[in-house]
Every structure is written in C-alpha cells, then in structure tokens.
Image 1 (cartoon, rainbow, N blue to C red):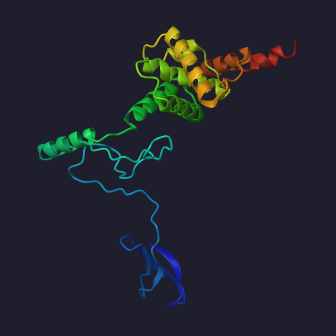
Image 2: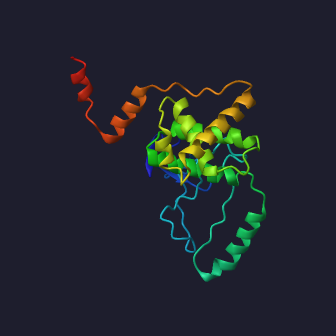
Length: 233
C-alpha cells in the first residue's frame, strides 16, 4: 500500500490499487482516486505446466522494424510432461506450416548477434549489419550463396561504416567456417548489389592504420601510457 490525498477524507490515506480495473481506491472511504491506470511493470505470473525456464516474465522482447510483424510473432513452446506433448507438437506443426517470411531473417540476425558478441562489438554495429543484410535479402538475389560468408561480410562492412573497422581475419575467426576468400567475395557482392540498389557506390568508410592499432590495444588491454611516453620524443 501507499498513501495519497483523498478529497473526501480531506487528508492523506492509504490507497489500494485494483489491478483488474486499473483503479486507485481510498482504503477508508472507497473513493476512486484514479481510474484506468496502466500498470507498466512486467507480468510475473507462472503456471504449473510451464517449461523450466527461469525467467517468469510473460511479455515479449522489443519490436524489430526490420521484420514484417515487428518481431511479435507467436512462438509455441513445448512444455514438459506427457499431458502437453500431443497438443504442443500439433500446434508446433501448424505453426511451421504457416508461412513466416521473417524466419530466415530471424536466424540471420541471431547469427550476426553471436558474431558481434564474440568480437565485442557495440549494438550499433550489429544493427547496421542487420540492416545491410535485410537490404541484400530484399533483392532476392543471394540464393545459393554461402550464408555464413554473407553475414560475416555484412558485419565487416558495418564495422567500416561505423568507423570501427576490423580486419577480414578477425571477422573470419567468428564466421562459422567461412574462409577469408569467401568473405571477400561476399563483400564485393554486397557492395555491388547495394550500389545497384541506390544507383551509386556504397560508402564503406575510410580505414586508417591507427584504427586497427586502437582496436588491438583495447582488446589486449595494453597500457595507453605507451603513447603518452612516445609523444615526448
């Protein structure tokens, strides 16, 4: 409970929040002090037949403007226990039969996120790589190409556009087996496709040797005092 001023009681009284109606009610006289309030907190209910997920929040993640439905599609989970086995498998089959144009994008974005995390990249680079991949995918011309190399190339280009370049060798180390040659070919393909899309060359950003030095120092935690000492000579 909390206190609020009640106009009928003419003083501060304890109030009760009615979650079902969204009303704030005076506990002494019953006056509705505020009606239809929105509870912005997460719904923390769990149910006995749910899976053993430690997170009881029953709300979804943030929307993604790059997905057709904003990333709000329903995912049918498979609960534990025999009682829900047949039901969940049946619903799961129907869900899989339904056309989900974002399924490939979701998997691609997850792969990009994994590569970004392994390289310690900021979210803006990951988002830029997602955007680049979405633009390429919209052209429906990447079928048959090495998807791991294509996603790695998107990340490589995103790093350069965000002025946080990484070498092809670094990108290759998290590219799920794609070779440097394959990533290089994918990069050229993306630049060509996006250049054709916009009618101009794709801005790749300018790489300076110092950019890679700063990146190396940051990742290996070399003391920057080395540069301060050098500046006196």
